Image (tube, rainbow, N blue to C red; front, side, top):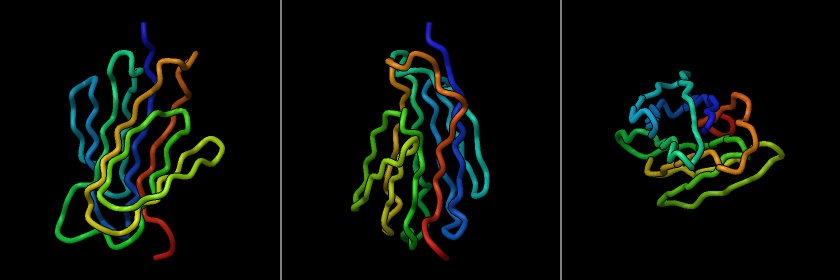
Length: 132
């Protein structure tokens, strides 16, 4: 039997003023997260085929600032983007730095089967990077 753990997705795209779309596979629910808002969802393991699919909602024009995605290092993820990006691992966090451009990136997060215990409540932050 698979246990779930909670994960909070936070939208910190304050300067870009973009909404985030979060799809939760287990509940088959989609959520639009406005800037300075968040949602907490249960996340089962990949064994039960649960995942979160996160993307920026398209709007007129490109993203003008770098976007930084901060996620837990225990998470498995798939990231797709049309532009260049950098991945940085910092102790217990992974940082994805996405340069300005079309808001076409997508992130799929899963919880690995091999974790002995579900991680404590954790978070994913999507936000502006650098000074305004």
